[in-house]
Each structure stands twice: as C-alpha cells, then as structure tokens.
Amino acid sequence: MNILVVGPHPDDQELGMGGTIARLLSQGHHVLILDITNGEPTPLGSPEQREIEWNAALEVFRGQCKNGGTVQRKLLGLPNRYVEHTIEARHAVAGVMREFQAEMVFMPFFEDAHPDHRAVTRIVEDARFDAKLSNIDLPGEPCYPKWMIYYYCTHLRWVVDPTFCMEISEEEMDVKEAAIKAYHTQFVLPEKNRRVVEFVREMNGYMGSRIGVRYAEPFFTKEPMGLTGFGALA
Image 1 (cartoon, rainbow, N blue to C red):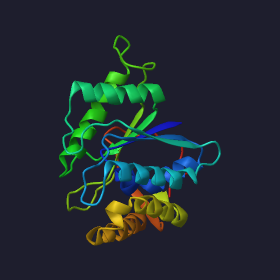
Image 2: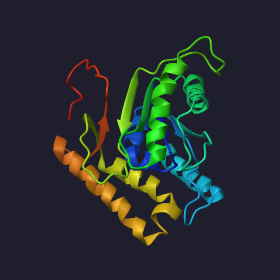
Image 3: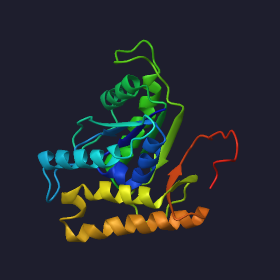
Image 4: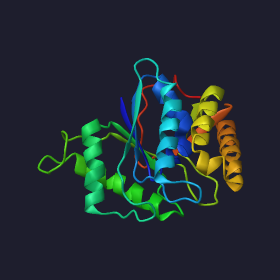
C-alpha cells in the first residue's frame, strides 16, 4: 500500500506517529513523508541543519524497511509560520498524492493551537478532492485516497480522545525516539525541549495501557473504517 504521511514541519510526523511509520515499513508498505515547510527559523536551527536532521530521521526509518517496504521524504516548501489554505497549496499537495498514487493519508489532528497545523490539515483534506479530478492541470493520474487518518501532534494542553490506537512494540518505540532525537537542534540541544521526548514515551505508554499493551499511538478518523475480521485487534 502507498501511504502518505503529511506534516507541517519536519519532526511532526516522528512525534505523532513515528512508531506506526516503523511498523508500516516492517510490514512492507511504501511510505512517503511529506514536509509542507522546512520548519525554520528556530532558535538553534537553520535550513541546512534541519535538512541534515530530517535526512538522519529518514535513515532511522530506512532501517525498518522489510518485506519490500520503502520510505522516502519530500519537501513541499511552503513558508514556515505562514502556511495558508489556498488553491495553490491544495493543488501542490494533490499533485503529490497523484504522483505517489496515495491510498492512505495521515495528517495532523484538526484542532490545534498552531496555525500551520490547522492550515495543513485543511489543505490535505481538500487536496484529496482535487487529486481525483480528471480535467485539471496536475501531474500524475487521478487518484482518491480511500483512508484519511489524523495523528496527534498538537500544541494544545489536553488529553487526546482517539478513535483507535495502534500498538507499537518496545523496539518501535525506540525507533520513534531515535527519529525524534535526530532533530538535534530541536530536542537535544535546547534543554527545555529534552523532556518532550520523555513526554511522548509516557503518553504512548498511557495509550498502550488503554488497550492492554506496552505502547500505542492514538489516531482519529471522521469516516468509518471497515473490518474484515477481529484477528488483528489488540
């Protein structure tokens, strides 16, 4: 399956669903990580350093590719902190969906304190419609991703209320943490941000406890997801 994981800034996907990305790759899926902006400026970062870091995180995920699974990364290049829901932005994301022939799309949860996160989610939701149009000047063949799933990487101080949780193993949790720490200027150098990595592990541990496993990542869907059986339920 071709799975598109969209993030407003490099590191959002790792924070929100890094363990699930690792699992998808080990199961043989093809994952495209799409960064809408480069995430800069930040206090200790730079565009050049941030690129080094997102490529380092990508290499962490590449170590999980098994059974034919592949992972790649693409930067859309909209300006950080100035992301707007426009036709141009929608069409740019729709073009990525079509070129990749995305079947499943992950994006940030739609309620957030960060304007970029809210704008990106609206862009991705509407790009799904644009991607299926036949009489439109976009690259690739029309496609319509069947599944649209929201991951949590929110700046709101609240407890998430997911539709479902994906179990992740201890090893996948470690992969997630390593991918987050690849962003050295964001979560290693700034002392105040080092606890973020611990918070994420603790939150995933709590989510795991809700479904009776060690770790889990929470997700939300607006549309129903069909089951073909109950054999994979945690």
